[in-house]
Image (cartoon, rainbow, N blue to C red; front, side, top):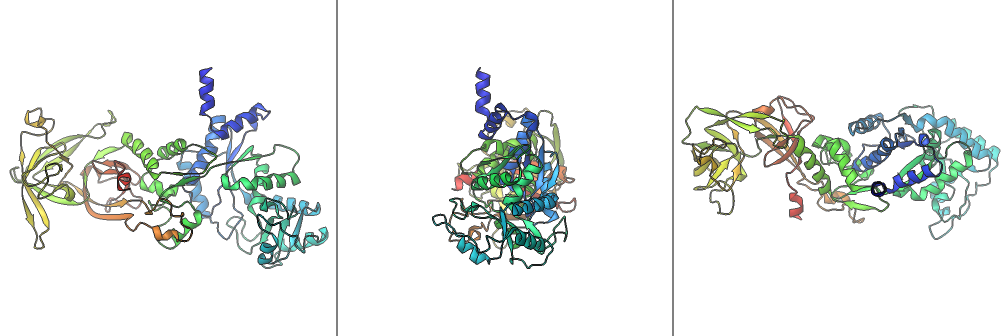
Length: 561
C-alpha cells in the first residue's frame, strides 16, 4: 500500500490527468502526445520543459510522440529553424514517432473552413484591422457585429475562393468564425481563421496565399494526428474554449484531443521571449542564437551543458499550474553535479604570471602523476611535466600577502598541486612597475606523494600551475549572466536591453593549458582545477584552441548579490 501511495505522490498533475482518463475509459493504446514548435527561432530552456514533459509521458506510457512544426506563418519561418529544432530534440535524447507539419494539412484545413462557411459558422470580413479592433470591444465592454457578418454563404464561398486564388491584397479580406461578439472570452468574439499572405512558404512554396491562424490550425492538426492530450503553457488556457469550439464544428467521431495547460518555465537573469531573443541576435548584442550566454538549447550546448543536466533541471523544477521564476543557480547546480562526476581534471592558467624556482636545477624536468578524475576510479592518471619555470595565476600572488590570505607572497609559502612547497623570494618588475616574474625557492623534499615527512607538512594554500616549457596556448571565453537584474522584463517602461550586462563576456588570450589537451575536440568538457568547468568551443581547432566556461566550481553569483 505504501508503494502505491508513493507512486501516486510522484505523479505530477498532468500525469494524474492521464491516469484519470485511463480509468474512465481511455485505452492505453490511444494515448498519443506531441511537441509542436513554431519554426520561427531556436528553442530555449523553456521549450525544454515542454519537450521533456511530452516525451517523458511518451516514455512513461509507452506512447508515440509526434514532432509537429506549426508552420503557418511564412513571413517568420525558415528551414534553418526546422533543422535546429530537430537537432535540439535529438540532442536532448528523444526520438519522435512521426515528423509532421501543419502545412501537411493546408488542404484539409481549407476544406473544413469551407464546411464552416457552408454551415453558416464562418464569414469573410472586409473591415480594416483598426475597425475590427474597435468593434471587438474590451474585456468589460461587449463587441458589436461586423457589418459583413451576415453575408450570404454563396458570397462568402466566392470571396474565400478568390482569397485562395490570390486575387486580393494582404489585409483586404479575412475569414472569421461566427461565434458571439458579446462573449465574455474575447477569443470567442469571431476570431480570425485565415488571412491573405503573399509570401513563399519554406515547404509549400507559392502554392498558397491564404494561411490559417494558430487557433484554427492547432486543434484540427491534433485531431488529424489523433493526439490524445494536447499540452500547452498557461497562456493558452483562455484558448481552450475556442480549441473545443472548433473541434465541435467539424468532428463528431474518433478520439477528441484534450487540451490541458501547465506553467511555463521562467528563468531569472535572462529573457525567454523568442521575439526578444531575436532582437538580441539581429542587433548583434550576442553572437548568434548559439551564443553561450543565450538561454537557447544550442547556446547551452555550446557553453558545455549536457542533455542529462538539462533533463535533471527540468525534472527538479517539476510541472505545476502556477507561474514561477526559477533561479539560474539551480540550472548551474545541475551541470556542476553532472560534470563533477564525468569530467577529467586539468591544470590551466588563465592569466599567467611566470614563476622561476631559483634553486631548481636548470634544464631539468620531472614527471608528476595526477589523477584524471578522483570521482571516477577508472579514469586513470596522467603525466605532467614539472620544470624550473612555471606559470601560476596572476591573482594567486600578492607581493605583500596578509597572513589569512592563502596566496603566494614574499616570504610566504604555498604548495604547488601535485608538486612541491615553494616560498616567495623576490619579484621582477617592468618599467611601469608591473610584476612580470616571481622568483622563489622550493623544498625538494616536500614533493606530494613522495612519502617523506616534508611532503606531509601542511601549508595554507595550494596553487595550480603549468610548466612554462610544456604547455599549449588557448583562448578562454569567460561567461557571466547576460543581464544585471533578475527580471529584465519586470519594468515595462524600460527597454529590457538597458539591463544587458556589459561584462557578460571576457575573452582571455594566451592562456596556458596542459599539453594533454593539444588535440581536444569541440564539445569535450573538462574541469580546470580551482577555476571551473570548461568546454571546447565549436570553432576550436588544433591551431586555435578555444574554451568556454560552462560554470564556476561554486556559485559566486549568490555571494555577489
